[in-house]
Every structure is written in C-alpha cells, then in structure tokens.
Length: 106
Image 1 (cartoon, rainbow, N blue to C red):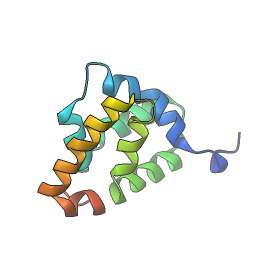
Image 2: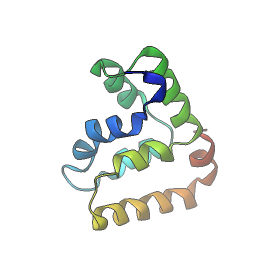
Image 3: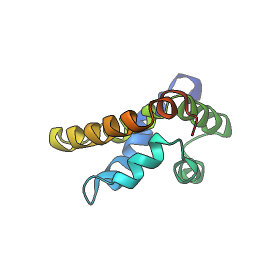
C-alpha cells in the first residue's frame, strides 16, 4: 500500500472513536484536543504500527495547525445526539478561547 495515497482519518477514527465515546461524552478529552494536547493520541498512533514515522509527524503537524481535525475524526462514528453534544462543548470552548483552536496555539 502506498502510504502517501491513504487518508489516516479512517484509521484514527477506527482506533479511537469508540474509546473516546465509550462512556459518554468526555469533556476533558474534548478540552485537551481543543487546547492542542495530543501527546497521548500521538503515542497511541505511533505504538499501533499502522503509521510510518513520517505519517505520525504529518498527523501531529495537522492536529497542531487545526485540532478540529482530530475532533472530527473521533466523531466520525458517533450517533447524532452524541455528535451534537460534542459540538456544543467544542463551541463553548471556542467562545472561551477562540484563538487556540484555530491555530493550534495553547
């Protein structure tokens, strides 16, 4: 498989979405993502063996520039009600700190 041609979001969603939503909406995880705190997520991706080092760096860079990309991948398999709850939390965080979510600056 040519790794340059694949979209990692499907793999990320498959790895994390159920864990992310398993016990209901996890406010602290959403807040960490919004603030650009990705170390746990990146470590899990690196340890999975599904991604090359180059892909890990690229994913991390993408998340730093736009944390919303991780958030969206995690919600890919969420039911409509859960997705709306998470969107409300994200919107509230945007109101408190709009610049951090748009730039990856925390």
